[in-house]
Amino acid sequence: MTALSARKDFKLSDSEFRMFAELVRAHCGLHFAEDSRFLLENRLGRRLHELDLPSFAAYHFRLRNQGPGDNELSMLIDELTTNETYFFRESGQLRALIHEIFPELRLDRSASGASGSGARKGSPINIWCAGCSSGEEPYSIAIMAREIGMRPGVDLRVYASDISTRALRKARQGIYREASFRETDVRLRDKYFVEKDQLWQISSEIKKDVDFIHLNLMDRSKIALLGSMDVILCRNVIIYFDSETKGQVIKTFYEKLRPGGHLLLGHSESLINLSTEFELRHLRNDLVYRRPLAGFTPRDPWHLAAEAAIRSTDDKGER
Image: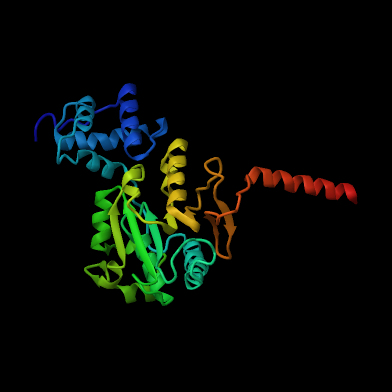
């Protein structure tokens, strides 16, 4: 070990913090506010030690001047992204997807797109898990779809993307620890996984149901290669973006969804102050967003609230 690699006291200056925060935000949308400074400093420091670099300035120079085949920026993003998830997370929303949204979409397919979505008769439902982490979410959907008799590749196509190459490697391997099953029915775990040495390997049948893609949500040119989607799940992802980036990503989702297509966000996320183009649907199991069908004009939720308040006042005055 060199004297340099033994250092443990790297500290970000104010200007260095701003430089790295802006570089990361411009690349992939991740937002680091002042209260996240220690986290950024700590993760950057790991890379400095591993690369034996003398300073944050030297590391910033390397990132800004990557040559062909240099994947250091991707490795840094692996350090900075949070990949905490588990199977059947926010299960109420998944039940809404499987038992309410999917039947509607299948009916639309059988009616040759009579609802105006533009989907061809008999075509598969396309679903995109954006920010899929280590794969538990798309695999959960594939399992639940099989449980209701849907045929992967025929009735359903599941696409899953993440910016973290490390997370995608784990997703493609499909090997999980016990913690990933904290909300999983034992029957489903035993049916679709094989246990070995306290690890659980997902079945090859489910693994081939999901197409994993390395994708940056800020890369509109690569996203354009994806076809039109019927459902997009992006749960607990945009909370890591600033308002401007959130707006850009939501606009991208709107453009990728067919008319009548659904957007499912995490329960701590909403489109308030981000977009008025979606309509909010109250399903039995959860609340979801939908891109309206052609001819529908979304209403500003604040205007709707004001109208309700006015009607209430008028009703009281008439009594």
